[in-house]
Length: 213
Image (cartoon, rainbow, N blue to C red):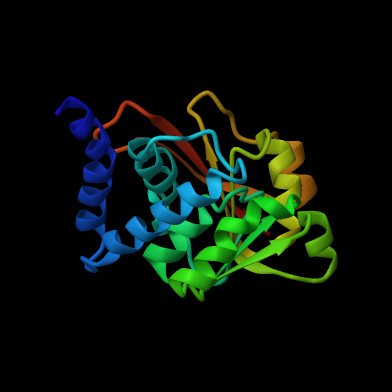
């Protein structure tokens, strides 16, 4: 019984967050389908070290969508890996997302979600951020989660952001904002830093929101 409770805990916490923040009660069904695909892909291609269903719901899904209110317009997730945070965000927001990663096999889960779940508002792009920026691609919102330190991450993300666009960086509460010299160099400014604890957990996060000047 304890194992069953532990297995369901993460899903229940995530479901509570969905019900509190979104009116679509069928969203959890989409995440059940995503979870099935996640374990199928992760058993063949190591896209993540997270192996339990409860951890997937909290450490991938809940962690990804917690700052959803900062996202708008056309979005790009830099260094998305297996598809986090872009896959959960695409599901709950309905916004258009590009999942960008330089390692092609990590994008397998996104491609399978498009094909098998009909998730048509997300596209996997095998490229580096620098190369995509050279093609003139610009987005309303850029995200990066666990990519690098804040200063390096901004240098990758800023060239992809439209003027007035937002850059959302997922960090821990031990991380500090980018240096002023870095912000000036890549033409961004910090407009918000928010600390929070994921619902019904002890997982603490900090999100930095930058605006492209």
